[in-house]
Amino acid sequence: MTGGRLPRGIRNHNPGNIRRTATLWRGMSVDQSADPTFIVFQEPLWGLRALGRLLRTYYDIYHCRTVAAIIDRYAPPTENDTAAYRASVAAALRVAVDQPLVRDVPTWVGLMQAIVRHENGVGDYYSPDLYRSAAQMALD
Image: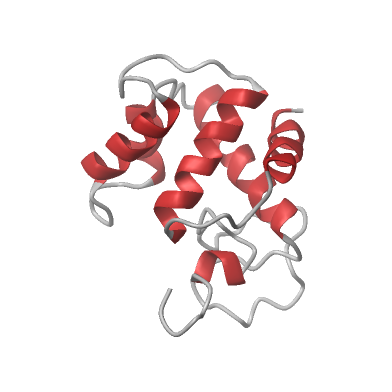
């Protein structure tokens, strides 16, 4: 954070920095003019839920079942240091990058926390309860 400003993803209630597409996410702000690139959500719960749903889609539809597969899709090397991203997420989850993940709330909470930390920097932006609620909503 520079000058006391919160990171962009936190300001937009979009801690996963999900880019704008044609998808109309639940909880999107009606006014999207605050950011030309990334979605703005009404509140953090909706941004975290969207992150969880996106990860669920990768897991269920695209069969991305490891940290490596998920991060390769989520943060492609054309825009990110994917190797560093994979390593930080795997370390946070205490798994190998190629270890299959379980599709459950505790795993999703850890995965979302690691991505939010990587996208926005270290900070206690959200409570564990908020992550759990968002993960539950995303997986239902």
